[in-house]
Image (cartoon, rainbow, N blue to C red; front, top):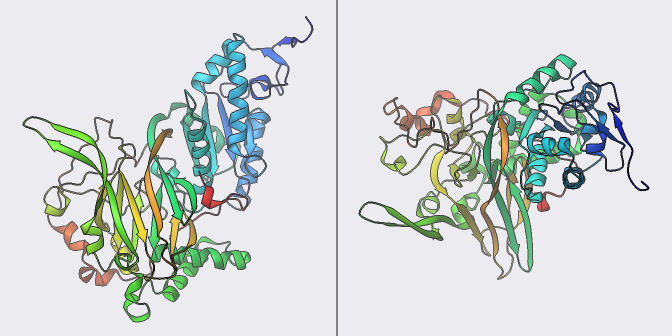
Length: 478
């Protein structure tokens, strides 16, 4: 009949059988491709997204290997095509085929898994695209470490060293993806309101403000001016330390005024559930914004970090695991990636950050909340620095009567693929304790006191970051 596509039995764009348990036929991926009938559905159909600009030449090499092992049409270079366009085209085609009664399309729709290779910025880009599409059955995502920070893959058990790109390494990784378990992860919305303009973005890992973001911004600026000097991780860390010294992150009292402290810059509010206790139950009536005394009373806090994952700056855990022996920690829980709460941590300076290198070390735990709001008014400073998932920027502050508001709130979830050992914990996992008693006595409390850390004053490790493609605007990052 005219207008109908010819169906060919056993046809494929390349020899089937090499890694056919992961292969997806052309006609599923391309609406105009010739339809085929296959003997059986792939056990673990995957679509691969790779940033060819990540990891030096590793990104391009990894694309070549995946295309050798799979259908070339299921491997995408993110420097050439955005993930939202790819996924929209794929799922539109899947829905059409499902309506036409294509059984293979139904099975792939149910079992599809995504792989993204790149830095944290690249992974966040794909996660945002999946979240924004609001699919009825969104595919779970595995992350390949191929940047410098690699906090997302490290949090879910995929490691933090850049991936190998040979065929055996890729086959091994695909085997792990096939058997990986699914785990939800919270997404947070970031809104900037400045006069009549509102900028919206999002993050999966962390938002930070203050001196750590300023040092990161200085490092990025230096790398942009002289990219040829930033090809070695050890050299990058040395440069990062030099930038920190220059900005006053190591010696604040000597070179910078108190206006750099968070309490002098902003009025801070957090969003908490309004709980009414009863005789045998607690009734939750909703959420409300409350002025947070603990944050604003910490006058020495020069950097504030809002954490979603238990990994920051290449694997550090600023929140740690609070115990019940300490009064200040009794209302805190271990960090879960799907409980709708962000962990808010403060640091005084880089020396304070050194406690993260010690067992049970953590920053100053300030709050766990459903959201946080920073209100900036005229007079404190003309700008500050902020950072989202490794991407820093210089944020102008009010010079007139306007108020700049930066607000973070919960915005849905996506599904990740977790490998063992997985550092992230789920609130729905029965093996995850709701409150952990500290078995180390008073050690954790002592280690937080910088006076007890004189022997640890050595070079502070660089907060590794990743540069997403230049065409991606961080102000509209989702």
